Amino acid sequence: MVAVCGCSEKKGRGMGRELAGECYEAAMEKDYGRCDALADSLLRVARAEGDQEGIVNGLYYKGLYDFKPENAAQRRPYMMQALEKAEALDAPALLCKIYNALAFYEVACYHRYAEAHKYFTLALAEASRTGDRRMQIVAETNLSELYRVSGDTMALRYDQDIYRYATERADTALIHSAAFHLAKYYIKKPSQAASAIPYINSVEQCGDFALSNALWGEYYLAADSVEEAQKRLDQALASNPDYSDGYLLYANLLNKKGEYLRSLQYLERAKTLSDSIDPFSSTPIEANRIASLDYQGLGDFAQALLYQRAYAEGRDSILAMRNQAELNRYKIEYETHKKEAEIDHQIQLRRQQGWLFLTIIVALILITIAILWHQRRQQRLYRSIVAQNRDFIEREKTTAPAAAPGPSDQKADEIYASIVEELEQRHIYRDVTVTRDSFAERVGCNHTYFTQVIRERFNMSYLQLMNSYRMREALKILSTEPAPGAEPITMQQLAKDLGFLSVSTFYSTFKAQVGMSPAMYRQTLRKLPPTAEDNE
Image (cartoon, rainbow, N blue to C red; front, side):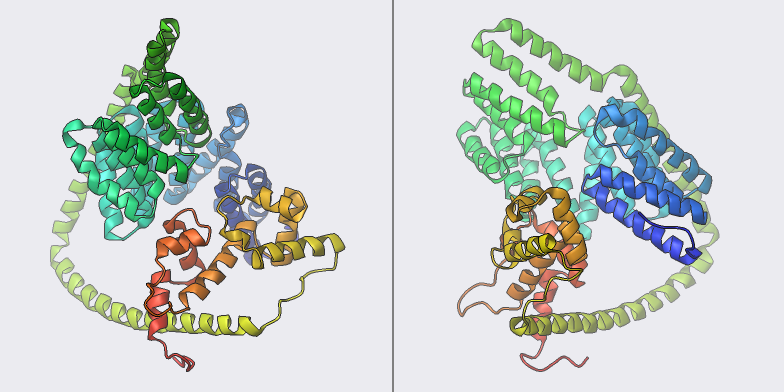
Protein backbone atom coordinates (compact mmCIF):
# COMPACT_ATOMS: atom_id res chain seq x y z
CA MET A 1 0.00 0.00 0.00
CA VAL A 2 1.36 3.44 -1.01
CA ALA A 3 0.45 6.39 1.21
CA VAL A 4 -0.38 9.63 -0.64
CA CYS A 5 -1.31 11.96 2.18
CA GLY A 6 1.34 14.56 2.86
CA CYS A 7 3.43 13.71 -0.26
CA SER A 8 4.80 16.58 -2.30
CA GLU A 9 3.88 16.80 -6.00
CA LYS A 10 7.38 15.81 -7.04
CA LYS A 11 7.43 12.84 -4.71
CA GLY A 12 3.92 11.78 -5.70
CA ARG A 13 4.77 11.79 -9.39
CA GLY A 14 7.97 9.89 -8.62
CA MET A 15 5.93 7.25 -6.82
CA GLY A 16 3.56 7.15 -9.79
CA ARG A 17 6.40 6.40 -12.19
CA GLU A 18 7.74 3.71 -9.85
CA LEU A 19 4.29 2.11 -9.52
CA ALA A 20 3.80 2.19 -13.30
CA GLY A 21 7.13 0.38 -13.67
CA GLU A 22 6.05 -2.27 -11.16
CA CYS A 23 2.72 -2.67 -12.99
CA TYR A 24 4.64 -3.27 -16.21
CA GLU A 25 6.83 -5.89 -14.53
CA ALA A 26 3.79 -7.70 -13.08
CA ALA A 27 2.01 -7.62 -16.46
CA MET A 28 5.07 -9.07 -18.20
CA GLU A 29 5.09 -11.88 -15.62
CA LYS A 30 1.31 -12.33 -16.21
CA ASP A 31 0.75 -11.84 -12.47
CA TYR A 32 -2.56 -10.02 -13.00
CA GLY A 33 -3.58 -10.13 -9.34
CA ARG A 34 -0.46 -8.21 -8.31
CA CYS A 35 -0.83 -5.95 -11.36
CA ASP A 36 -4.38 -5.00 -10.29
CA ALA A 37 -3.30 -4.19 -6.74
CA LEU A 38 -0.43 -2.01 -8.00
CA ALA A 39 -2.75 -0.31 -10.52
CA ASP A 40 -5.17 0.57 -7.70
CA SER A 41 -2.30 2.22 -5.82
CA LEU A 42 -1.19 4.02 -8.98
CA LEU A 43 -4.70 5.39 -9.51
CA ARG A 44 -4.89 6.70 -5.92
CA VAL A 45 -1.52 8.45 -6.24
CA ALA A 46 -2.25 9.86 -9.71
CA ARG A 47 -5.72 11.16 -8.78
CA ALA A 48 -4.42 12.80 -5.59
CA GLU A 49 -1.73 14.61 -7.59
CA GLY A 50 -3.81 15.38 -10.69
CA ASP A 51 -1.47 13.29 -12.85
CA GLN A 52 -3.64 12.56 -15.90
CA GLU A 53 -1.05 10.36 -17.60
CA GLY A 54 -0.71 8.33 -14.40
CA ILE A 55 -4.51 7.90 -14.29
CA VAL A 56 -4.49 6.61 -17.87
CA ASN A 57 -1.71 4.14 -17.01
CA GLY A 58 -3.58 2.94 -13.93
CA LEU A 59 -6.77 2.33 -15.93
CA TYR A 60 -4.75 0.63 -18.68
CA TYR A 61 -3.18 -1.90 -16.29
CA LYS A 62 -6.55 -2.52 -14.60
CA GLY A 63 -8.05 -3.21 -18.01
CA LEU A 64 -5.46 -5.60 -19.47
CA TYR A 65 -7.01 -8.84 -20.71
CA ASP A 66 -5.98 -11.68 -18.38
CA PHE A 67 -6.85 -14.40 -20.93
CA LYS A 68 -9.90 -15.42 -18.87
CA PRO A 69 -13.03 -14.73 -20.97
CA GLU A 70 -15.24 -14.69 -17.88
CA ASN A 71 -13.36 -11.60 -16.60
CA ALA A 72 -13.58 -9.59 -19.83
CA ALA A 73 -16.87 -7.85 -19.00
CA GLN A 74 -15.33 -6.52 -15.77
CA ARG A 75 -11.87 -5.60 -17.09
CA ARG A 76 -12.53 -4.13 -20.55
CA PRO A 77 -14.46 -1.03 -19.29
CA TYR A 78 -11.27 0.13 -17.55
CA MET A 79 -9.47 -0.01 -20.91
CA MET A 80 -12.25 2.00 -22.55
CA GLN A 81 -11.95 4.64 -19.81
CA ALA A 82 -8.19 4.74 -20.43
CA LEU A 83 -8.87 5.24 -24.16
CA GLU A 84 -11.27 8.13 -23.52
CA LYS A 85 -8.77 9.95 -21.29
CA ALA A 86 -5.81 9.26 -23.61
CA GLU A 87 -7.78 10.68 -26.55
CA ALA A 88 -8.47 13.82 -24.50
CA LEU A 89 -4.73 14.12 -23.75
CA ASP A 90 -3.89 13.41 -27.43
CA ALA A 91 -1.00 11.22 -26.24
CA PRO A 92 0.19 9.03 -29.17
CA ALA A 93 2.36 6.66 -27.08
CA LEU A 94 -0.49 5.98 -24.63
CA LEU A 95 -3.02 5.58 -27.44
CA CYS A 96 -0.73 3.14 -29.25
CA LYS A 97 -0.51 0.70 -26.35
CA ILE A 98 -4.23 1.03 -25.53
CA TYR A 99 -5.23 0.26 -29.13
CA ASN A 100 -2.91 -2.76 -29.07
CA ALA A 101 -4.52 -3.99 -25.84
CA LEU A 102 -8.04 -3.58 -27.26
CA ALA A 103 -7.02 -5.53 -30.37
CA PHE A 104 -5.87 -8.40 -28.17
CA TYR A 105 -9.32 -8.43 -26.55
CA GLU A 106 -10.92 -8.73 -29.98
CA VAL A 107 -8.68 -11.63 -31.05
CA ALA A 108 -8.16 -13.62 -27.85
CA CYS A 109 -11.55 -13.11 -26.18
CA TYR A 110 -14.10 -12.38 -28.91
CA HIS A 111 -12.42 -13.75 -32.09
CA ARG A 112 -13.46 -10.61 -33.99
CA TYR A 113 -10.62 -10.27 -36.46
CA ALA A 114 -11.95 -7.26 -38.36
CA GLU A 115 -12.27 -5.25 -35.12
CA ALA A 116 -8.79 -6.38 -34.09
CA HIS A 117 -7.44 -5.18 -37.43
CA LYS A 118 -9.05 -1.78 -36.89
CA TYR A 119 -7.39 -1.34 -33.50
CA PHE A 120 -3.98 -2.61 -34.67
CA THR A 121 -4.14 -0.19 -37.62
CA LEU A 122 -4.96 2.69 -35.26
CA ALA A 123 -2.02 1.61 -33.07
CA LEU A 124 0.27 1.76 -36.10
CA ALA A 125 -0.99 5.24 -36.97
CA GLU A 126 -0.30 6.47 -33.41
CA ALA A 127 3.13 4.84 -33.45
CA SER A 128 3.89 6.72 -36.68
CA ARG A 129 2.91 9.98 -34.96
CA THR A 130 5.50 9.40 -32.26
CA GLY A 131 8.28 9.02 -34.81
CA ASP A 132 9.52 6.04 -32.78
CA ARG A 133 10.46 3.43 -35.40
CA ARG A 134 10.74 0.69 -32.79
CA MET A 135 7.14 1.34 -31.70
CA GLN A 136 6.04 1.22 -35.35
CA ILE A 137 7.79 -2.14 -35.80
CA VAL A 138 5.88 -3.56 -32.81
CA ALA A 139 2.60 -2.38 -34.36
CA GLU A 140 3.58 -3.87 -37.74
CA THR A 141 4.42 -7.16 -36.01
CA ASN A 142 0.92 -7.31 -34.51
CA LEU A 143 -0.67 -6.60 -37.89
CA SER A 144 1.54 -9.24 -39.47
CA GLU A 145 0.31 -11.84 -36.97
CA LEU A 146 -3.32 -10.94 -37.72
CA TYR A 147 -2.87 -11.03 -41.49
CA ARG A 148 -1.11 -14.39 -41.21
CA VAL A 149 -4.10 -15.91 -39.37
CA SER A 150 -6.47 -14.72 -42.11
CA GLY A 151 -4.12 -15.84 -44.90
CA ASP A 152 -3.66 -12.26 -46.17
CA THR A 153 -0.35 -11.75 -48.04
CA MET A 154 0.05 -8.34 -46.37
CA ALA A 155 1.82 -10.33 -43.64
CA LEU A 156 4.71 -10.99 -46.02
CA ARG A 157 5.23 -7.28 -46.67
CA TYR A 158 5.27 -6.41 -42.99
CA ASP A 159 7.62 -9.28 -42.12
CA GLN A 160 10.06 -8.27 -44.87
CA ASP A 161 10.02 -4.69 -43.56
CA ILE A 162 10.60 -5.92 -39.99
CA TYR A 163 13.42 -8.24 -41.09
CA ARG A 164 15.22 -5.41 -42.93
CA TYR A 165 14.87 -3.10 -39.95
CA ALA A 166 16.06 -5.77 -37.50
CA THR A 167 19.04 -6.77 -39.67
CA GLU A 168 20.20 -3.16 -40.04
CA ARG A 169 20.18 -2.76 -36.25
CA ALA A 170 21.36 -6.28 -35.37
CA ASP A 171 18.23 -6.70 -33.23
CA THR A 172 18.38 -10.43 -32.49
CA ALA A 173 14.85 -10.72 -31.07
CA LEU A 174 13.21 -9.06 -34.09
CA ILE A 175 15.43 -10.97 -36.55
CA HIS A 176 14.33 -14.19 -34.87
CA SER A 177 10.61 -13.32 -35.07
CA ALA A 178 10.58 -12.01 -38.66
CA ALA A 179 12.84 -14.80 -39.99
CA PHE A 180 10.55 -17.41 -38.42
CA HIS A 181 7.46 -15.92 -40.05
CA LEU A 182 9.14 -15.54 -43.46
CA ALA A 183 10.41 -19.13 -43.35
CA LYS A 184 6.89 -20.38 -42.52
CA TYR A 185 5.47 -18.38 -45.43
CA TYR A 186 7.88 -19.72 -48.04
CA ILE A 187 7.70 -23.33 -46.80
CA LYS A 188 3.97 -23.28 -47.58
CA LYS A 189 4.73 -22.19 -51.18
CA PRO A 190 6.11 -25.26 -53.03
CA SER A 191 7.52 -23.17 -55.89
CA GLN A 192 9.33 -20.85 -53.44
CA ALA A 193 10.32 -23.33 -50.71
CA ALA A 194 14.06 -22.79 -51.31
CA SER A 195 13.59 -19.13 -50.31
CA ALA A 196 12.86 -20.33 -46.77
CA ILE A 197 16.37 -21.73 -46.23
CA PRO A 198 18.19 -18.40 -45.47
CA TYR A 199 15.50 -17.51 -42.95
CA ILE A 200 15.69 -20.92 -41.25
CA ASN A 201 19.46 -20.36 -40.98
CA SER A 202 18.79 -16.92 -39.44
CA VAL A 203 16.65 -18.51 -36.73
CA GLU A 204 19.44 -21.01 -36.05
CA GLN A 205 22.03 -18.20 -35.89
CA CYS A 206 19.86 -16.53 -33.23
CA GLY A 207 20.52 -19.60 -31.07
CA ASP A 208 17.02 -21.10 -31.22
CA PHE A 209 17.92 -24.62 -32.32
CA ALA A 210 14.55 -26.07 -31.25
CA LEU A 211 12.65 -23.71 -33.55
CA SER A 212 15.12 -24.05 -36.44
CA ASN A 213 14.84 -27.85 -36.22
CA ALA A 214 11.04 -27.53 -36.27
CA LEU A 215 11.26 -25.36 -39.38
CA TRP A 216 13.58 -27.85 -41.06
CA GLY A 217 11.12 -30.59 -40.12
CA GLU A 218 8.28 -28.65 -41.76
CA TYR A 219 10.48 -27.96 -44.80
CA TYR A 220 11.31 -31.65 -45.29
CA LEU A 221 7.71 -32.66 -44.58
CA ALA A 222 6.51 -30.35 -47.37
CA ALA A 223 9.07 -31.99 -49.65
CA ASP A 224 7.82 -35.50 -48.61
CA SER A 225 11.21 -36.35 -47.04
CA VAL A 226 9.46 -38.04 -44.12
CA GLU A 227 12.47 -39.68 -42.46
CA GLU A 228 14.55 -36.47 -42.47
CA ALA A 229 11.51 -34.52 -41.23
CA GLN A 230 11.00 -36.98 -38.35
CA LYS A 231 14.64 -36.70 -37.29
CA ARG A 232 14.42 -32.90 -37.17
CA LEU A 233 11.08 -32.85 -35.34
CA ASP A 234 12.39 -35.34 -32.75
CA GLN A 235 15.25 -32.92 -32.05
CA ALA A 236 12.89 -29.94 -31.89
CA LEU A 237 10.50 -31.52 -29.36
CA ALA A 238 13.40 -32.84 -27.28
CA SER A 239 14.69 -29.25 -26.99
CA ASN A 240 11.28 -27.63 -26.43
CA PRO A 241 8.56 -30.03 -25.19
CA ASP A 242 6.00 -27.16 -25.05
CA TYR A 243 6.15 -26.12 -28.73
CA SER A 244 2.56 -26.59 -29.95
CA ASP A 245 3.36 -26.30 -33.67
CA GLY A 246 5.99 -29.03 -33.22
CA TYR A 247 3.29 -31.46 -32.06
CA LEU A 248 1.03 -30.37 -34.92
CA LEU A 249 3.77 -31.04 -37.47
CA TYR A 250 4.55 -34.37 -35.86
CA ALA A 251 0.87 -35.33 -36.01
CA ASN A 252 0.86 -34.49 -39.72
CA LEU A 253 3.98 -36.63 -40.18
CA LEU A 254 2.41 -39.57 -38.33
CA ASN A 255 -0.69 -39.26 -40.51
CA LYS A 256 1.51 -39.54 -43.62
CA LYS A 257 3.09 -42.68 -42.12
CA GLY A 258 -0.33 -44.20 -41.39
CA GLU A 259 0.07 -44.04 -37.56
CA TYR A 260 -3.38 -42.51 -37.07
CA LEU A 261 -3.89 -43.14 -33.33
CA ARG A 262 -0.52 -41.63 -32.41
CA SER A 263 -1.30 -38.70 -34.70
CA LEU A 264 -4.52 -38.01 -32.74
CA GLN A 265 -2.59 -38.06 -29.45
CA TYR A 266 -0.13 -35.47 -30.75
CA LEU A 267 -3.01 -33.31 -32.00
CA GLU A 268 -4.55 -33.19 -28.52
CA ARG A 269 -1.23 -32.06 -27.07
CA ALA A 270 -0.86 -29.41 -29.79
CA LYS A 271 -4.35 -27.95 -29.15
CA THR A 272 -3.87 -27.92 -25.37
CA LEU A 273 -0.59 -26.02 -25.62
CA SER A 274 -1.88 -23.61 -28.27
CA ASP A 275 -4.97 -22.64 -26.26
CA SER A 276 -2.83 -21.66 -23.27
CA ILE A 277 -0.07 -19.80 -25.13
CA ASP A 278 -1.03 -18.11 -28.41
CA PRO A 279 -4.37 -16.34 -29.07
CA PHE A 280 -3.36 -15.80 -32.71
CA SER A 281 -2.60 -19.45 -33.38
CA SER A 282 -4.40 -21.32 -36.15
CA THR A 283 -3.22 -24.62 -34.65
CA PRO A 284 -6.71 -25.75 -33.46
CA ILE A 285 -8.13 -25.21 -36.97
CA GLU A 286 -5.30 -27.08 -38.70
CA ALA A 287 -5.56 -29.82 -36.06
CA ASN A 288 -9.18 -30.42 -37.08
CA ARG A 289 -8.08 -30.94 -40.69
CA ILE A 290 -5.46 -33.53 -39.73
CA ALA A 291 -7.87 -35.23 -37.29
CA SER A 292 -10.37 -35.62 -40.13
CA LEU A 293 -7.70 -37.40 -42.21
CA ASP A 294 -6.76 -39.58 -39.21
CA TYR A 295 -10.35 -40.75 -38.72
CA GLN A 296 -10.67 -41.41 -42.44
CA GLY A 297 -7.58 -43.62 -42.17
CA LEU A 298 -9.15 -45.43 -39.20
CA GLY A 299 -12.37 -45.97 -41.11
CA ASP A 300 -14.45 -43.83 -38.74
CA PHE A 301 -16.11 -41.68 -41.40
CA ALA A 302 -18.68 -40.15 -39.02
CA GLN A 303 -15.91 -38.66 -36.85
CA ALA A 304 -13.98 -37.67 -39.95
CA LEU A 305 -16.99 -35.70 -41.18
CA LEU A 306 -17.41 -33.95 -37.81
CA TYR A 307 -13.79 -32.79 -37.82
CA GLN A 308 -13.99 -31.76 -41.46
CA ARG A 309 -17.01 -29.58 -40.63
CA ALA A 310 -15.18 -28.10 -37.63
CA TYR A 311 -12.21 -27.33 -39.88
CA ALA A 312 -14.46 -25.65 -42.47
CA GLU A 313 -16.24 -23.59 -39.79
CA GLY A 314 -12.91 -22.48 -38.32
CA ARG A 315 -11.61 -21.33 -41.68
CA ASP A 316 -14.92 -19.62 -42.49
CA SER A 317 -14.81 -17.73 -39.19
CA ILE A 318 -11.49 -16.21 -40.24
CA LEU A 319 -12.12 -15.78 -43.95
CA ALA A 320 -15.80 -14.73 -43.82
CA MET A 321 -16.69 -12.23 -46.52
CA ARG A 322 -17.84 -9.61 -44.01
CA ASN A 323 -14.56 -9.64 -42.15
CA GLN A 324 -12.53 -9.78 -45.35
CA ALA A 325 -14.40 -6.80 -46.74
CA GLU A 326 -13.72 -4.84 -43.57
CA LEU A 327 -10.06 -5.87 -43.57
CA ASN A 328 -9.73 -4.60 -47.14
CA ARG A 329 -11.52 -1.37 -46.30
CA TYR A 330 -9.28 -0.65 -43.30
CA LYS A 331 -6.24 -1.54 -45.38
CA ILE A 332 -7.26 0.86 -48.17
CA GLU A 333 -8.00 3.62 -45.64
CA TYR A 334 -4.59 3.19 -44.04
CA GLU A 335 -2.75 3.19 -47.38
CA THR A 336 -4.73 6.26 -48.52
CA HIS A 337 -3.93 8.23 -45.37
CA LYS A 338 -0.31 7.16 -45.65
CA LYS A 339 -0.10 8.35 -49.28
CA GLU A 340 -1.73 11.69 -48.44
CA ALA A 341 0.76 12.20 -45.62
CA GLU A 342 3.64 11.45 -47.99
CA ILE A 343 2.34 14.01 -50.55
CA ASP A 344 2.02 16.69 -47.86
CA HIS A 345 5.52 15.89 -46.68
CA GLN A 346 6.94 16.30 -50.20
CA ILE A 347 5.25 19.70 -50.57
CA GLN A 348 6.79 20.86 -47.30
CA LEU A 349 10.20 19.62 -48.41
CA ARG A 350 10.07 21.67 -51.65
CA ARG A 351 9.14 24.83 -49.73
CA GLN A 352 12.08 24.40 -47.39
CA GLN A 353 14.64 23.13 -49.91
CA GLY A 354 16.93 26.17 -49.72
CA TRP A 355 17.24 26.13 -45.94
CA LEU A 356 17.24 22.36 -45.78
CA PHE A 357 20.53 21.98 -47.67
CA LEU A 358 22.36 24.33 -45.30
CA THR A 359 20.70 22.72 -42.27
CA ILE A 360 21.82 19.26 -43.39
CA ILE A 361 25.45 20.37 -43.78
CA VAL A 362 25.49 21.99 -40.33
CA ALA A 363 23.73 18.98 -38.83
CA LEU A 364 26.25 16.57 -40.40
CA ILE A 365 29.15 18.54 -38.94
CA LEU A 366 27.54 18.59 -35.50
CA ILE A 367 26.62 14.91 -35.73
CA THR A 368 30.18 13.97 -36.71
CA ILE A 369 31.57 15.89 -33.73
CA ALA A 370 28.96 14.35 -31.44
CA ILE A 371 29.71 10.83 -32.71
CA LEU A 372 33.45 11.23 -32.19
CA TRP A 373 32.90 12.65 -28.71
CA HIS A 374 30.37 9.94 -27.87
CA GLN A 375 32.67 7.16 -29.09
CA ARG A 376 35.57 8.44 -27.00
CA ARG A 377 33.32 8.89 -23.96
CA GLN A 378 31.75 5.43 -24.50
CA GLN A 379 35.17 3.79 -24.75
CA ARG A 380 36.23 5.41 -21.47
CA LEU A 381 32.95 4.37 -19.87
CA TYR A 382 33.32 0.79 -21.09
CA ARG A 383 36.88 0.58 -19.75
CA SER A 384 35.70 1.97 -16.41
CA ILE A 385 32.83 -0.55 -16.21
CA VAL A 386 35.10 -3.47 -17.03
CA ALA A 387 37.80 -2.35 -14.60
CA GLN A 388 35.25 -1.96 -11.78
CA ASN A 389 33.77 -5.39 -12.45
CA ARG A 390 37.23 -6.96 -12.59
CA ASP A 391 38.12 -5.41 -9.24
CA PHE A 392 34.77 -6.54 -7.80
CA ILE A 393 35.44 -10.12 -8.89
CA GLU A 394 38.89 -10.06 -7.26
CA ARG A 395 37.48 -8.62 -4.00
CA GLU A 396 34.66 -11.16 -3.98
CA LYS A 397 37.23 -14.01 -3.85
CA THR A 398 38.44 -12.83 -0.44
CA THR A 399 35.23 -11.40 1.02
CA ALA A 400 33.18 -13.45 3.48
CA PRO A 401 29.46 -13.83 2.72
CA ALA A 402 27.31 -11.09 4.23
CA ALA A 403 24.84 -11.85 7.00
CA ALA A 404 21.15 -11.83 6.22
CA PRO A 405 19.90 -8.19 6.03
CA GLY A 406 16.76 -6.93 7.69
CA PRO A 407 15.23 -7.59 11.12
CA SER A 408 15.94 -11.01 12.64
CA ASP A 409 13.25 -13.64 12.15
CA GLN A 410 14.15 -17.29 12.62
CA LYS A 411 11.97 -18.71 9.86
CA ALA A 412 12.91 -15.96 7.40
CA ASP A 413 16.58 -16.40 8.32
CA GLU A 414 16.36 -20.13 7.60
CA ILE A 415 14.63 -19.56 4.26
CA TYR A 416 17.14 -16.85 3.38
CA ALA A 417 20.05 -19.17 4.22
CA SER A 418 18.51 -21.96 2.12
CA ILE A 419 18.03 -19.60 -0.82
CA VAL A 420 21.65 -18.46 -0.60
CA GLU A 421 22.83 -22.08 -0.38
CA GLU A 422 20.79 -23.06 -3.46
CA LEU A 423 22.17 -20.10 -5.41
CA GLU A 424 25.80 -20.12 -4.31
CA GLN A 425 26.46 -23.80 -3.63
CA ARG A 426 24.10 -25.63 -5.98
CA HIS A 427 23.88 -22.92 -8.67
CA ILE A 428 20.15 -23.48 -9.10
CA TYR A 429 19.90 -20.54 -11.49
CA ARG A 430 21.60 -22.67 -14.17
CA ASP A 431 18.61 -25.02 -14.32
CA VAL A 432 16.17 -23.78 -17.00
CA THR A 433 13.41 -26.01 -15.58
CA VAL A 434 13.34 -24.30 -12.18
CA THR A 435 10.31 -22.10 -11.55
CA ARG A 436 9.46 -19.79 -8.68
CA ASP A 437 7.18 -22.45 -7.20
CA SER A 438 9.69 -25.30 -7.50
CA PHE A 439 12.41 -23.12 -5.95
CA ALA A 440 10.06 -22.29 -3.06
CA GLU A 441 9.41 -26.01 -2.49
CA ARG A 442 13.14 -26.74 -2.38
CA VAL A 443 13.69 -24.23 0.42
CA GLY A 444 10.58 -25.38 2.30
CA CYS A 445 8.01 -22.62 1.97
CA ASN A 446 5.09 -21.52 -0.19
CA HIS A 447 5.10 -19.14 -3.18
CA THR A 448 3.91 -16.08 -1.23
CA TYR A 449 6.36 -16.37 1.69
CA PHE A 450 9.20 -17.17 -0.71
CA THR A 451 8.51 -13.98 -2.68
CA GLN A 452 8.25 -11.95 0.56
CA VAL A 453 11.64 -13.18 1.85
CA ILE A 454 13.31 -12.37 -1.46
CA ARG A 455 11.91 -8.84 -1.52
CA GLU A 456 12.74 -8.15 2.16
CA ARG A 457 16.19 -9.77 2.28
CA PHE A 458 17.52 -9.20 -1.22
CA ASN A 459 15.52 -6.04 -2.04
CA MET A 460 14.67 -7.33 -5.51
CA SER A 461 12.17 -9.52 -7.36
CA TYR A 462 12.61 -13.26 -7.95
CA LEU A 463 13.60 -12.74 -11.60
CA GLN A 464 16.05 -9.98 -10.66
CA LEU A 465 17.64 -12.25 -8.03
CA MET A 466 18.12 -15.15 -10.47
CA ASN A 467 19.52 -12.85 -13.14
CA SER A 468 21.90 -11.16 -10.67
CA TYR A 469 23.55 -14.53 -9.93
CA ARG A 470 23.63 -15.38 -13.61
CA MET A 471 25.33 -12.07 -14.33
CA ARG A 472 27.91 -12.60 -11.54
CA GLU A 473 28.87 -15.93 -13.06
CA ALA A 474 28.85 -14.49 -16.60
CA LEU A 475 31.30 -11.78 -15.52
CA LYS A 476 33.59 -14.34 -13.92
CA ILE A 477 33.58 -16.55 -17.01
CA LEU A 478 34.12 -13.66 -19.41
CA SER A 479 36.94 -12.35 -17.18
CA THR A 480 38.76 -15.70 -17.20
CA GLU A 481 41.20 -16.46 -20.01
CA PRO A 482 40.63 -19.90 -21.63
CA ALA A 483 43.20 -22.61 -21.13
CA PRO A 484 46.11 -22.65 -23.63
CA GLY A 485 44.88 -24.05 -26.93
CA ALA A 486 41.21 -23.90 -25.89
CA GLU A 487 38.63 -21.80 -27.73
CA PRO A 488 36.81 -19.06 -25.74
CA ILE A 489 33.27 -20.03 -24.76
CA THR A 490 30.64 -18.94 -27.27
CA MET A 491 27.81 -16.65 -26.23
CA GLN A 492 25.26 -19.32 -27.19
CA GLN A 493 26.93 -21.87 -24.89
CA LEU A 494 27.36 -19.32 -22.10
CA ALA A 495 23.66 -18.35 -22.26
CA LYS A 496 22.67 -22.02 -22.10
CA ASP A 497 25.06 -22.79 -19.19
CA LEU A 498 23.65 -19.87 -17.19
CA GLY A 499 20.04 -21.02 -17.53
CA PHE A 500 18.77 -18.58 -20.18
CA LEU A 501 16.22 -19.91 -22.65
CA SER A 502 17.65 -17.85 -25.53
CA VAL A 503 20.76 -15.89 -26.47
CA SER A 504 18.67 -12.75 -27.02
CA THR A 505 17.39 -12.83 -23.41
CA PHE A 506 20.96 -13.26 -22.14
CA TYR A 507 22.17 -10.31 -24.25
CA SER A 508 19.38 -7.96 -23.14
CA THR A 509 19.77 -8.91 -19.45
CA PHE A 510 23.56 -8.51 -19.53
CA LYS A 511 23.35 -5.15 -21.28
CA ALA A 512 20.68 -3.87 -18.86
CA GLN A 513 22.71 -4.82 -15.76
CA VAL A 514 26.30 -4.22 -16.94
CA GLY A 515 25.78 -1.40 -19.41
CA MET A 516 27.31 -3.11 -22.45
CA SER A 517 26.99 -6.32 -24.45
CA PRO A 518 28.87 -9.45 -23.27
CA ALA A 519 30.94 -9.48 -26.48
CA MET A 520 31.97 -5.85 -25.94
CA TYR A 521 32.77 -6.62 -22.29
CA ARG A 522 35.16 -9.42 -23.27
CA GLN A 523 36.71 -7.32 -26.03
CA THR A 524 37.26 -4.34 -23.69
CA LEU A 525 38.68 -6.55 -20.92
CA ARG A 526 41.39 -7.84 -23.23
CA LYS A 527 42.57 -4.26 -23.86
CA LEU A 528 43.03 -3.48 -20.14
CA PRO A 529 46.47 -3.82 -18.50
CA PRO A 530 46.66 -7.20 -16.76
CA THR A 531 47.32 -5.79 -13.28
CA ALA A 532 47.32 -2.00 -13.22
CA GLU A 533 44.13 -0.17 -12.26
CA ASP A 534 42.42 1.78 -15.03
CA ASN A 535 42.91 5.51 -14.24
CA GLU A 536 40.82 6.87 -17.01
